[in-house]
Length: 373
Ligand SMILES: [Zn+2]
Image (cartoon, rainbow, N blue to C red; front, side, top):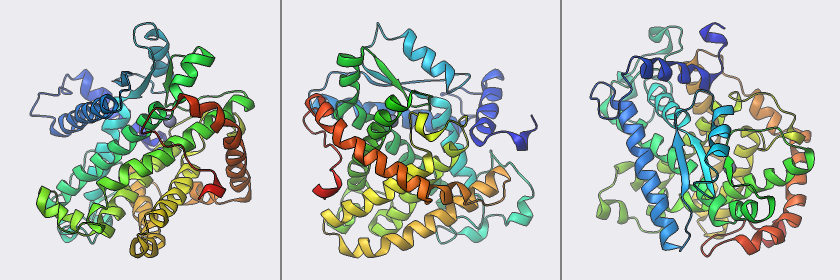
């Protein structure tokens, strides 16, 4: 397989693997600052998750991160292997976490991506960059480098909050108690159609809970404009629409990378809805969330911000991985077939919710049924 035929996540996995083989992938090494940054985010996310679970009196180990040869198979094998030692955990591949860091850093190194942020004129144009993949490119502008780290943190928080919802909303406890299954892996798996639709509703619930969990960390200045100055965070948070645009870019970016990173599985047998279908449902939840919180100004801005996130996400994907921009995966998520799948998931949710609800812990909030909204 030549580099440009590799799947996007495979490109990153290969370069990280090579770095590990050269022993250059060391958290403490100054020579690999980005890896160190990503792994330290991972550790701080783990700490954040553990603290949240402790506050809610949930005694579960939460997430176990690890480097694996194949995110799909070995992670699953690892999860099964460790089931007796650590009841109720979710296995997440560190390869994915670090790949996201590389992707966002390389994206901001391109002048045409998020060009209103920082001083993008310092970055190279597509012609100057030449054909990629540009997996190790870094922004020249220090502000854009800072933003790349911030977007990576948003992406990792999205993942953590998604996993936390699996725990809080009882998905894992249900599996522990009923299905005698001890762990979940976030790699897409092939299941029987009956199990697949059940699992897809849990993924939808985890994404919905995740949006609710993430938003207070993104748009807090909308309710309290002084807060960003008081806590001394990055200036972008003073403009909630700018922070929200970066968050949407982060979420679109990870889904875009994942959209081609797994083997093709028919949707009716897949453990997860397709990443682009998830984007569509996440955007829908965001819209409902802003409506519920009566954040009308942002609600009006959301359609435009989503459009920009898709445009920037596609530009980044094409520039970093040497692809042509391609909105086809997103187009499929807007098709009649996708609409039918969403309707199927929502219908299934009516059955799943009463089964799962007894396993949910305090603080967990199940996704509302459409007529609850
Ligand atoms: Zn999940």
